[in-house]
Length: 347
Image (cartoon, rainbow, N blue to C red; front, top):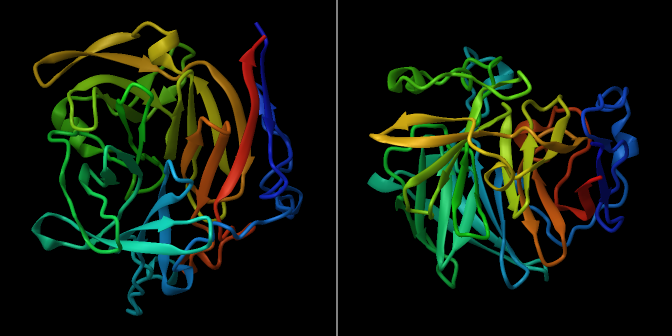
């Protein structure tokens, strides 16, 4: 069977070259030298990312019914100690906030207040349903009501006993919450998860094609429901979007490394469980992302993504325009980027 994928990118935002489908290797030259000049073209500032000059680092993305977007960010603080290497003097957490970006260029902001009145965290993925926002932050998922006007949001832990690093979130058309884990084995900070060892959970899983998978996606019956399934996933997982039949991933790590967008068939629809794992006194089915339909190199530091089913568009937020990453390679992208999906199918 030949898998084919077609991705139409709207020129009003940006143009990408070098589409890769199926199991083919990535084209030579992508991510090397000046190749990103071929990738970047027109840029639209309609959804400019706020606070970049004030050290805010964009992370999570969620589209809203009125055409606005929710954007989670943390404010990176500069540590001037000469004992800290220059590349590490920008913190990876700080004051956090949620912003709502409107089509007219306006935005309003909601400082995030965590349990214990703590504010200095690393807000990651964001999701929204029934008036509640959900924030992925480290080893937990938090929630709170979204106010109509700008102002603080007091968060509480939404999911107890979540064992994996919560990096990105998505809610599918059945109301299930998908929580993606970030793992990067080459990094001491984001490498192996010792909590998995304590729980007796394997550090890596191997899919049906013999590929090692180091990250896990946990699927809950609802944003505050029970664990329904586990899905093995590639490392460097920063963003995730569920389009019924498809699972979109944003994979990235490092200011000088190309990011990648991938699309897979939804294993909960198209596959039987590979096996069952014992978890919290229950047997939980484990699936693998095996049916890859698309992979595409994009500039460094892609973060969360959101799929708009109405326009069949995939929206991406990059963090590479933040001051913290000013010395990184590749184009700086200070606005949201949209990909228009024309067709993805098996032939």
